Every structure is written in C-alpha cells, then in structure tokens.
Image (tube, rainbow, N blue to C red; front, side, top):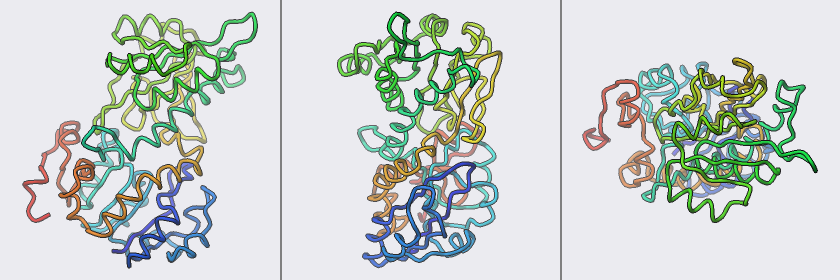
Length: 371
C-alpha cells in the first residue's frame, strides 16, 4: 500500500502523524511511504530521519494526496486540502465531525473512507487513539488555566497553589474521564483545592482511592454544579460522549455565578464544547472574555507540546496503521476497534451517532456491499 503523510496546516499545529520507526516497519513490509517536506519539523523530527527509515520526501501536499491510498494526519482536513482528497482514499486522522456540519458534508462529498482516531474503540470501551491526547490535554489544562489566572492575562491574579497564610486557588473539573483525571492530578500537584464532578459513582469511588487528598470527587447534578461554580477560580470542561456533540453544561446565564477573572478551559471544544459561550480558538489567540469570564478554547491543546504528543500518538496508531497497510479496507470489517472508528464510507454515513447529530441518512457498514 502507498501511505502518505502531509504536513499539518491547521493554525499553530506542530504535530506529525507518523513516526520514522513506524515508517521503517511499513517499508520493511513492502509498503511505500511518502512524507511531505518538513512534516516532522515542528516535532523535532528531520526529513533525514524519514529518509533513513526508507520513506521518500515530497515537496508539495497535493503530491502526497494524489499518490497515497492511505493518508495519515493528525487534524481534520482544512479547507485548502479538500480539493486534494481522492475518492475511495482512506483518511486516518482526528475528525471530530460532531463539531462541524460543514466538514462532515465536505467529507461526504469527497467520497473518502474516513477513519476517525477519536472513534476507534476497543471492546472494553477504551479509546486507544484518543487516550494519549486526552491525557496530554488534561495535564495541560491546569497549566494553561493557571497562566490565564494571572492578572496580566486578565485573570483574578490568583496563584493556584497559594502560599503560607493564603488559601490555594479552587479548581472545578467537570468530567472524570481521562482528561478529568489527569487535570485533577496536575491541579492537585500544583497545590490547588480541586473538586472533580461526574455522574459515574463507580468512577468517583475509584478516583477517591487513587487521587491526592486535595481532590474531592463529587456526584454531579445541576445544584452541585452551581454550588461549586460560585467558588471556582478555574473551571475545566472535560466531558466526552464519543462521536457525539459535547453536552453544554454551563449556560451563559451561569457565568453570572462566577467572579470576573475566573478562567474556563474547554477541553471538549473539539466536540463542540461543553460551555454555551465556547468557540474554538488557536494557540496564537487562545483566549477571549465573555461577561468578564476568560475562556480558553484551543481546539488542539496537545499541539503545544508537539514532540511529546507526536510520539504518544504515533506509538498508539502504529499497530492500526500496520494492519490497514497490510490488509487494506477489508480489515475494518475484521477489526472491531477500527470498525467503530469508521465514520464515512465512500459518501455514506456509517456512524449512527454522526447521522443523528446532523440528521443524515445512516448506512450501517453491514449493509454496504461490497466494502
């Protein structure tokens, strides 16, 4: 199979989708790998590293898309890339379709085979390709929140860890999944007073046993949410429904419960955001204020630590890439994790959640013949 790796062009996106070590494995198995010039530069990976692994460097993205049967990316195709897509081409990347009808329609029209990293799911319910990025985003969220709590950044002027004689800052984390757990660990390590909300009691019991004492796992409902919003200095939205739009848990009206200079970090922005007032931002312009409340809604948070993120993502995707390259599209029927990651197939919507999100016709993979 011919595998192509274009350079990411989303604003301030420095990650790369394929590691030289994986490129080497692919080449050794008889596959061709084309990598766009400087695709790995933002992650500290040189073109020579790919060449030494047996990959060929191409100068232009259109060359990559034109030649590749399987295109491997990090982020969803940007509008400039839409015209490069080839019918029946496999595109393996983060799509986060539920946050954009425009992207969804464009990909349907392109008739590609869209495999979404964030939807690949094992039988135990785990999300092996999303998990490493969720871990990184969770760990970055308190760091970014702490930065924008500083007065020069428009925040309250609060140090999350406090000092002797002065109480620490208060962090409210909504959602106790991978993002929430890691955000709680870092915020607790900074010395903050942390409340972690979720509706899964078993999860809360588990986290109570393993998280530091300054993290308080609390059952979430509307009354509890409002109670802790009034006290919070930093709020981290970490709610995920795989493949579906994130629920909006904080309305604009609820911003009035918080003091001016409070910071909201919406890690769910890729899936539409869990605050009503959220809109995607970039690392170049990461924040904006609504009613005096600072919003940090960067849609590619892990891109800030591109080297760590690229290696974490590349390690996770490698076995799936090798399977796809070896067996082609047929492997989607055989591998249950990849099958769940299939969102679009040659113009048909194969994800029921996506179809419901935008009221589109749902076409189960089993009824598409031949695959």
